[in-house]
Length: 208
Image (cartoon, rainbow, N blue to C red; front, side, top):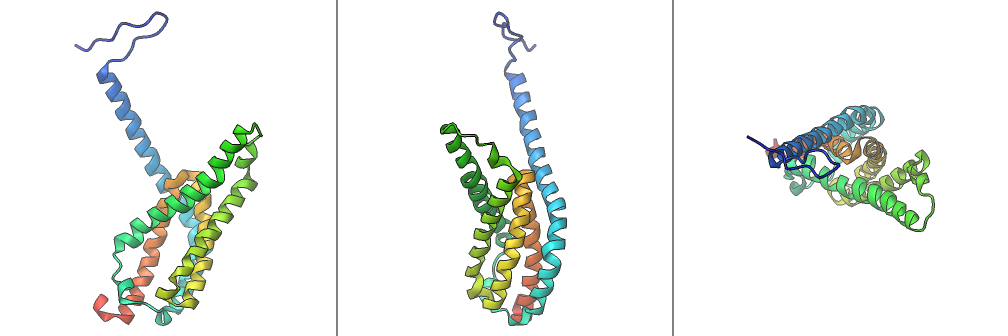
C-alpha cells in the first residue's frame, strides 16, 4: 500500500513517487494537448485569413506563370518532407521564434527591466505590429534566393507572397504561440507543393 511521507510541520502531506509520476504524466499530456490545440487553431484561423489574403491571388498568379518557371531537375526532386515539414519548422523557429519572439521581444524586455525602465510597451499592439512587419520583411527578403530555381519574375512575386504570409504567420505566432505558426506554415507549403508538382510534371514528364 502506498504511503505518504510524514508532513513537515505546517504543511500538507508530501506526495510519494507514484503520485509525482502521475502528476508529471498529466502535466506532460496537458502540454502536448495545448501544443496540438494551438497548432490546429493556427491552421484554422490563420489558414482562413491566409487563403483570403494570399492563396487565392498568389496561386492564380503562380499558375499563370507555371510554364515560365525556371525549374531545375534538382528542385523537382526535392523531397515533399523537406518542403512541407522540415522547411517550415526551421523557418518558423528562426524567423518567428528567434527573431520575432526572442530578439525583438524577450531580449529588449530583459534589457529594459535590468535598466529599471518600464517594458510594458513591448506588449502593446503597436509594438507587436512593428516586430511582425520587421520579421516579415526579413522573411520575404530571404526568398530572393529562389531566383536561381524559379526565375526572377516568379521569385519577385514570391517575395510579395512571403511578406503577406509572414504578416499572417506573425499574428498567429503572437496569438497562438510558435506551434500555431508552424502548423499554418506547413499547411501553406503543402498547397504550394501541389503547384510545384504541377509545374514539374509539365516540364519533366518523368516526375509524374
